[in-house]
Length: 406
Image 1 (cartoon, rainbow, N blue to C red):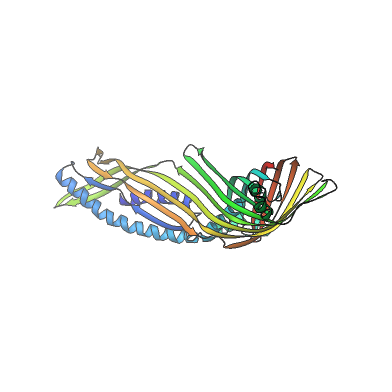
Image 2 (spheres, one colour):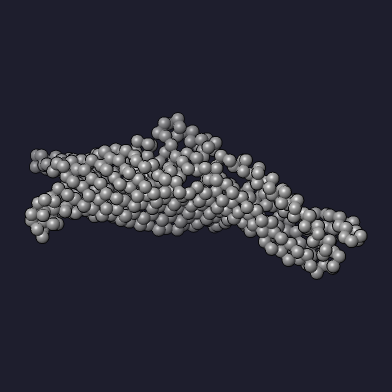
């Protein structure tokens, strides 16, 4: 009976680990179901309970062996620090949503709405990327990740605003532009009959730009250089992903035949029959929180009134953390237990299998240099922009923005 119970625990735990193995340090806790026999007759109850006590120790020994073997098999998943860092770095790339980089030097104000996807890869080497699936199978702790964001960005020409109240102050700040942006999205999706996926993203940032060279028009605006500006600020970006999957119940029926001796009374064989049920649940989540200070130099040109091209150099100073959590749990219960063909009188306390494979509090890369660019379309004050970023450590960002610039 004890060996049979170990089998269901091993099957359940192995199934749970399939959902968790792509993540971090593995801990396995197994609590077997407890059974107390009462109401079957004094001698038989005492005999069965004594037999169960002996079996419990055998069960504990086999659980310890199972844990050792599982840890050996899953050792390569023992530290997901690089993977967590990859998600944090991707989160910074995503924080550039609704950038105004293509339109600095505007007259009065600008409003942009847009989204950005950040991607971190372990390498840009084609041979590495084509073999990435095999790499993940052998060593899943790679610096890779993905993150989205959505934001509304509102910018003001500080000199123009202050000049409405004080012309001298307005003149002193005529090369300064300030902006504030923010955005959030919260969605929950049913991906199957027994699975859900939750996603939350939030952004908040402030920025300031100083126009080193002011915009210049050539040939009545057929060619417009928007000048050269330097900028900085502070942006908070958080992304959380979570999935929860309830797997189909594992239902197994086992039989065992055991001789029992109690107080000189021997029953040649007691046949036991039981149904063991486990319902595994797998929860996986990623939580990325970053605070980035951008340092950048920007320029852009407008061509033939319609096209807009921008380019720049920059770097991000980043603080924050990334957590990857992967937990799995299952209750186990014994039902329909019978002795020698007769339903036995017993009470059962459910057991459990718990698996924890989590990596937490991983810091993003402190400083990363980048180049950025973008292509846009002008329709008077209505702007469409496609910004693109490349970080020298194999990071990427790409998005789309639309807005009004005056």
